[in-house]
Image (cartoon, rainbow, N blue to C red; front, side, top):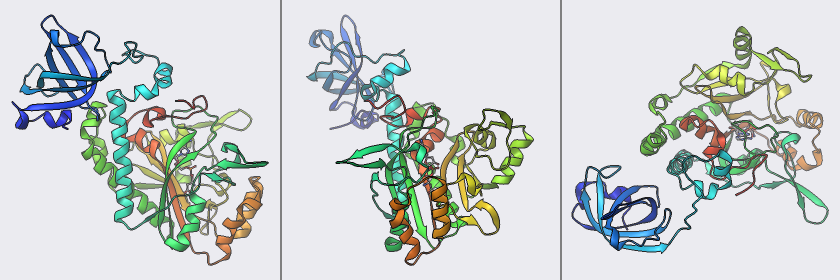
Length: 436
Ligand code: AMO
């Protein structure tokens, strides 16, 4: 069976062809009816039938099979090819009240996400996503990293207790939905060396922002016997490989989204590295302010975390990603290793996407001293009993190791320039949405 785009060359002109899909547009005239079909990959082809031969009940989104002779006709949309229909087979007549039209509210579109995903823009996004995942996997396979699958139902927090989803676990027990596979990846470096995983991660985020989801697609990697620079290099290579290949494979989809890919061609390593301290200096030079714990607006200072606005300020003039290196240990989770050369600061780095899109990865070296880990866990209010297995990793043959996590939807926001993260995932989960 051919798809619409297979027909857009002179190869099949004059041949009898068949295409399956859904009625995308329907234009009835006295003599002729134009049935524009969207195929199973979002390709569009026009067919034309004598109006007498078409059921008057045919509606938008009816599923059909069109057979006819392929013709070149400059008036036909998207490439000037048209099927002179001889047979129209209908699989299902769609209900006439298809809820998705041109000017619908964001909420209605989200409520009908299962149908909205048939819109051509959403098809383009879904295809770009598929290619991002494909090239990410390719990169790891080519570079001899082992894929693992970590559990989703877990007993401990990784990224702080405040964003944990608690679930009832049989009788009187409870568990959480995983925030990150990191601790399990760390366990696996002892038996598989460099490992990676692609799993959903869950965060009970109470902030409604354009870059937070409650469930996101998390690409994570971990390797033994590395230093921070090695970890940054892996991220540079991985991200540039994904971007370089996706913009070639999905050129048409970027065009459909009217997303300019010329600047993405520039995503070549090395990415600039700027220290956290320099980043704060830069923000202070711009009189950048933050709201402190008491709700007071004050100038940003050393020790403050970077937020969506400060990251935007830092990266808006960049056309390539950049790393912010060496965050204060006090604002990072228990697993972060302190920099022996810079007390109070961690061997960590976040990658910020350029043009203001902000953080897309976070990672670094892992603390291997159980005493400092447990002290920090206590400070974070974590139940150490649930982490005995993790502490064992430091007890039995620990090695320097590190890794990172990359949010696929964050990367999608940047490369497609889609502002709202909800539109970079198929079925978004946020504070106010768990359906469809
Ligand atoms: P972190 O919490 O920074 O670090 O997450 C890593 C990356 O995941 C993405 N991300 C999100 N994407 C969408 N919605 C969210 N709510 C969300 N939260 C995070 C971001 C972020 O950079 N274990 C550590 C990483 C490590 O050190 O290996 C971690 O999870 O792109």
